[in-house]
Image 1: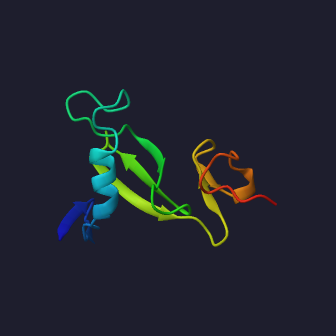
Image 2 (image 1 turned 90 degrees about the vertical axis):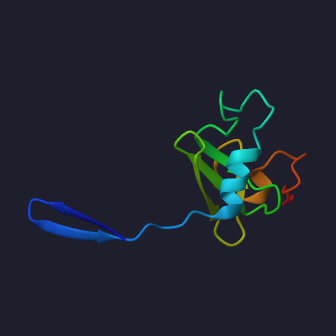
Length: 101
């Protein structure tokens, strides 16, 4: 636990662990591609679709060093074009997660 003192006010914070699956994604998914950052190959800051779950996505941040996994609301899927949760029928028709109306 870290304790910070600021102007006589003490705050205690617990470090929140990051999702190991998301960290593995951000450290490995861009390796050997043009997207990989020089030196590490980590993914640049941004949102990335989960390869396993249509309704999930990863946020890589701080030059890909940190990452978290997020889930869309029920019935929604991650749209990699708009980088937000959307209805499945709004995805490109060739997407694995596309569901026609």
